[in-house]
Length: 229
Ligand code: ATP
Image (cartoon, rainbow, N blue to C red; front, side):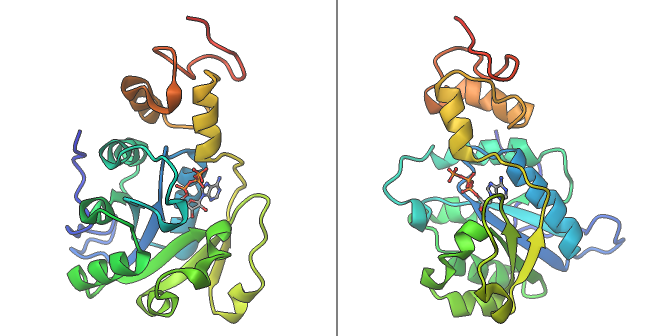
């Protein structure tokens, strides 16, 4: 259940650096309920565009903007993220927010990471949909002191006009029109999601019976095929 890779609190060498430290670190927060191919594409392409040594995936305990919504328990989402990232050594799982519990504020997480790793240069990765409400986050000005903001242009959304004025970096990634909501919806209707999530993620969805899956193996069939029991 627990991934073998180190947590955020345990720095490890940047791949290929030959050194024992890791300087440019991306922080990719989300609900990841479940992690999907859109997240993977963002993660891979942002690592390359921003030249990150490492990208930390940070599942939120209770995301402030999704309060009141039913969310898969943290223990399971931790497994889902670990499964989604297991093949890429540049990715790490950071469970600080799950361990802290309660509403997950990015500023608290960045402060925590900074306190543990004062030498790291942090980049906070977020979709343009989230950036649209960034000014209403807890202590946005402190967030911008602690980390460079990297806004990902999501399909169907434009980068907000004030991004450039605020000195925010924007990265256009290959559009992948998949969301966790779509995956949950399709699993709940017993439609295929095999192209949307990693096989290891799908295995956990099946094993845990997530999202109202009604068969033992939702989503394994060809696209748009409703499986029969
Ligand atoms: P939901 O559908 O439940 O709202 P989601 O698919 O947006 O979930 P989150 O875990 O909330 O997934 O997203 C984490 C981060 O990844 C956010 O910054 C979000 O904007 C970004 N993101 C999610 N899906 C995509 C995608 N297809 N392309 C680009 N960015 C994405």
